[in-house]
Amino acid sequence: MATTWIMVANGSEASVFRATADEITTIDAFTHPESRQKGETLASDRSGHFQSNPKGTGSGAFTEPNDPKEFEINRFSQELAEYLDKGRTENQYDSLVLVAPPRFYGLLNQHMNSHVKERIHSHVDKDYTKVPEKELLAQLKGQLPTH
Image (cartoon, rainbow, N blue to C red; front, side, top):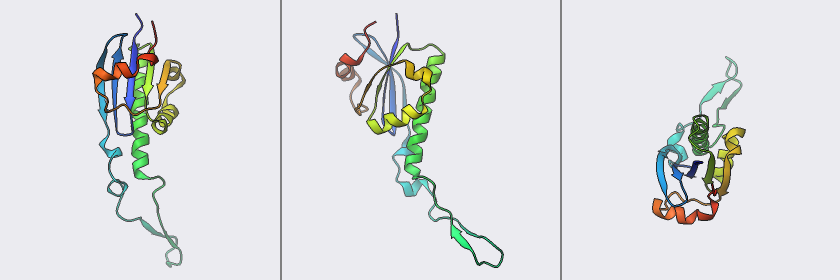
C-alpha cells in the first residue's frame, strides 16, 4: 500500500502526518522560533564600520545583506526540504501533499530537489498549522491521492 505524507507548514512551524483514506497520524513536528522574532533581536544593534586606508580618508558601514527575519524563514524552509528529501531516500512516503501559504511554499520549492518535487501529489495554498489534527483530514479530503 502506498504511503502519503502531508506537510502543513508556515514560516515558523510545521507538522508532518502519515495519511490514509480515513485517518492521519502525526509523524513529526517542527518549530522555528527565530522566524517569529523581530528583526532587530536577530541582528546586531549597530552596523560594523571600516576605514579603507590608514589615513582615515575612506570609511563606510557594513549593512545586513538580508532581512534577518527573512533569512531565518528561508533557513527553516531549507531544513524542511532536507527533511522531506531524507524521508524520500528512506522510502518513508510515496506521495506528498504540501499545505503552506504561497510565499512559504515558494521558499520550500526553491530548496526541494527534483526527486521530492516528483512525489508532490497536490499543494494547498493555506496556513492550516492551527487546524486540529482530526479536522485536517476533512479539510484535505479532495487533495489526497486515491491509492
